[in-house]
Structures are given as structure tokens and as C-alpha cells.
Image (cartoon, rainbow over all chains, first blue to last red; front, top):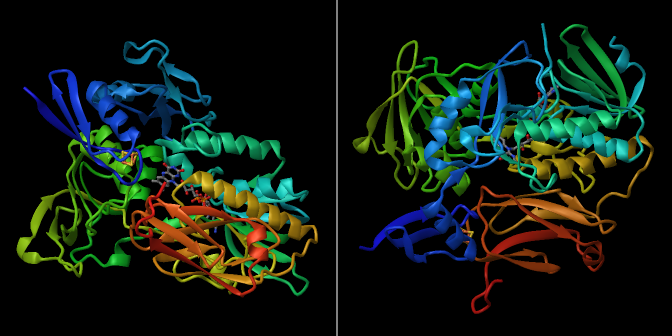
Length: 124
Length: 427
Ligand SMILES: Cc1cc2nc3c(=O)[nH]c(=O)nc-3n(C[C@H](O)[C@H](O)[C@H](O)COP(=O)(O)OP(=O)(O)OC[C@H]3O[C@@H](n4cnc5c(N)ncnc54)[C@H](O)[C@@H]3O)c2cc1C
Ligand code: SF4
């Protein structure tokens, strides 16, 4: 049976409303896009939607109470909340350097890490 | 007296956000020797430290960075360039002597009041958020009503949450980003309410910050009343009619303990006003010439204090230029005054700078009043450019070459955004 999914393209401010028809896992038709980016986006959203992720973690002994961190590769959309909970368990001690790896191979993905987005000196 | 601030500076930059850092680099590049940045915060970087999401630097660093990463990378350049930086220092006034020397009054946390002398000044104080007072929401005055950017600072730097159950008025990017941020931190976001029939934020943020988390976006809806004595208990929201008045017959209540306001930014211009600088009532920032000089000779402006930018990369680009001209000024360069006024025409809300000179190439920053698609930009009778679309939330940027202006003999150049001509397809 053919089913339809709707997406809004995020490629540019036009925000084309996209329609994707599929039978199970097979895409049968994509429509509604004004340029190729829209079609590509709908396909990606249907097959493997992912999101950039950044948040903050607790830091001790620094000027601020929170340290901004990010995941170095996009996280599966359905695991974003789980990822946030995992990252929030972290508790970091100053000093920390920009780009320092805080969790290696995050969510069992090879070479995808949680890293610090800034340097924070130790302040006593 | 802070020993670092002794003697006379070439350029003093007020505010150490991306605009101030860019201006300082530009000034050093122009050959100015002594450049000082003053910022009231404990570190330079401005609002970037709290913008922990990615989306910065695609143009300038050719890489998508988070705000803090952009700030730190840029800050390292400032150190390399031997710029003096004094933080925890609030600039409370600027005055100009008869010989053109500027005295900048500084209040420092440890050292008290002080004055720094300089040949030129760059204003880069950024902007601040509109508050409840600026839109006069009826109701009680409980705690728990705060601007979304302030909430961002509280959450991302200070490490506590503004509340548990959040409603957001206004769908600008700051509001959308905070909806996701607070959800990730375990708060419940009850909804985003937008008075206009469209969102003011990027589609990417509507999709990834609201739809992904099932947060409802109510368009053409506003907050009509705030309830609660000590703390917000609930808000009444109502759909609005065409004239943007709430229709109370269709109103409903939303339970929440916090209301975030994402209702716009205003350039922070108390200093500019106290200097008697001419302002643009539309941008809320100073009027500037093509060298980004204000109506006060030797005082320049760039970044959000001049007009609210959506991308930090453009703040940087504009500020490098402002710093360069400020540095030149300090070294005695006096360029001929601009002889062409640039004025907004059809569907143009504003354009910056306010005047041009045929001497150089210019970058024009402007915004439209209403979305139009497809359309064309017409600059007097000099040039016409086709665009696929314009929307108020996205700044329009283009260049005007000097040879074009050489051919222009009038004194006023008008910019219009017009519908695309029929029959001609846009590319
Ligand atoms: C929520 C949010 C999301 C954003 N998202 C993006 C994005 O995804 N991508 C992007 O490119 N851009 C984004 N931006 C925009 C970008 O961050 C800003 O355009 C940029 O930071 C503006 O730089 P600025 O230096 O003009 O102002 P600011 O960064 O505000 O810096 C001004 C500085 O001046 C100081 N100051 C002010 N008055 C005084 C005084 N009297 N004395 C001393 N110091 C003073 C302040 O302390 C501050 O440090 C976002 C902005 C916000 C708020
Ligand atoms: S499909 Fe193309 S034109 Fe439409 S929103 Fe996406 S990028 Fe923009």
C-alpha cells in the first residue's frame, strides 16, 4: 500500500512543502520541491533523519557553571533525547580546552565524539 | 589607573563582541598601533558564548561552528594581533574635545572610574532584547516573564533553568532555539505563540526546534493576559484578527510557570544618543557614511549596534571595515565626504550605509518590508538584480562597483524591491 509523508524543506527560506510517497521502505515519488535540494532532503529525512547536537554540561572550578559541548557528527533523530540525557551525566573539571574529547565514540559510533566547544580556565 | 590603559590610544572599541573584535583587527590591519577593546563582561565574545547551537562561521571560517567556537577562534586572532583588552569595564560616556580627541569614561569593577583618550572610537555595543514593557501585555506582574535571550544566558552559562513549564511569545530564532534547548534540559514547552501569520525564524529552526519535539506553533495568536501573583500561573492566549487585535471570544488558557519573550532586538545606543549622533529611526542605530562613520567625526559603528544582523559572519565583515576606517582616521587619513545619499524605496525597510562615494566598492546591507517572490532589486537606474525571494527575516546583501557610481550624476540613489517582470523567468 502506498503511504504519504509530509516534510518542510529547510534548505532555504522558501520552505517548500514536500510530499513523499512510499511503499514500505521504497520511495515511489517525491513532489513539491522547487529545486533538487528539496528532493534530497525528503529522501534523507525518510531514510535516515539526523540532527546536529549541542548542549551544555556541568563544569567545576571555572568562571561559568556550564560548559558548551557538541557531538562531532549528526545524531539519529530518534536518539536525540537519549543522547542529551547521556551527555548531561557528564561532570567536567576545569581546565578544559577547545575541542577536548569528553566522551569517545559516542552512542557506539566510531570516531564520533562529544567535545568541548571552548576553553575554560581553572578559577579557584 | 589601569596601567594598560595609560597614554593615548589610536582606536578605542566599545564592546568586545564579534563586532568589537572585528573592528580591533581591522584597525590593526590599517596600521593603527594602539588599539583597545573595552567590555563590561568578564570576557570578550559578546552574545556568542551563550549561542551554543551550530550555525556560525560558514562564510568567515568556511565551517559550521557553534557560537563559543566562533568566539574563541576569533579571540585567538585578537591576541595574535596585539590588541589591548580590558574587561569588566562599562563605558558610561564619551566626550569630544575641541581638537577632536575623544575621552572615553570607563567604570571598572576593581579600579573604579577612569578616562581613556583616543583619536577614534568604534561603537560596537550590540543590541538588547525588547521586554514586556515594549508591547504592554496586560495582566499581573509576577516573576517568570523574561526575554528569551536572557533565559539563554541563564541556562547556558549560569546553569539554572528559568522554570519547568514554559510558554514562548514570538517565533524569532531565539525563541525557537530556546524551545529546543529547554526541552533537551527536561522542561515542558507548552507552545510558541506568534502574532503574525508566519514564523519570523528560519524554517530549519521551526522544523528542528519545534516539529521534532512536537511543540505546537500557534500562528496569528498572541498572549492576551498574564495571571499569577508571585509567579506566573497561566496565560490567556487568543487568536488575532486582521488588525492584530486579540479575539477574546476564542481565547484559551495555557498553564505555565514561565513566559519567554522573543519579540525582537533593539540596538543598544544610549552612548550614541548621549554623543548627539544622528540616528536612523528604522534601524534604531546611527546613520553612517560609506566608511561606517557616524555623524560625529572619528566615531564609527558596526555590528548589531548599527542594525540587527542575523549572521555573525556579516557582523565580522562589516566590523573589519569599520575598524580599518577608524584606524585610518587615527593616522590622519581624511577621505572626501560621500556625495550620494542612499535611500529606501518600494518594499525596502532600511539600507545601510546611508551614503556612498564613487571612490570605492560598497557592500549594501538591507531588509525588505514584506516577503516577495520572485522579485528584483533596482538601484536607481544603475543596476537591477533578480532574486528568487526576499523575506524580512533575512538580510539582503549585495555589492555596488565604483565604475557604476562614476556614471551616476544625481545626489540621491533609491533602492526598490519590485515584483519580477512578467514573462521573464528568474534564474
Ligand atoms: C539566540 C541567538 C541566535 C543566533 N544565531 C545565530 C546563528 O545561528 N548564526 C549566526 O551567524 N548568528 C547568529 N546570531 C547573531 C550573532 O550572534 C550576532 O549577530 C552577533 O553576536 C552580534 O555581534 P555584536 O558584537 O554586534 O554584539 P554582541 O555580541 O551583543 O556584543 C556586544 C558587546 O558589547 C558589550 N557592551 C555593550 N555596551 C557596553 C558598554 N556600555 N560598555 C562596555 N561594553 C559594552 C557587551 O557586553 C557585549 O559583549 C544569533 C544571535 C542570538 C541572540
Ligand atoms: S526545495 Fe529548494 S527552493 Fe524549496 S525550500 Fe528547499 S532549497 Fe528552497
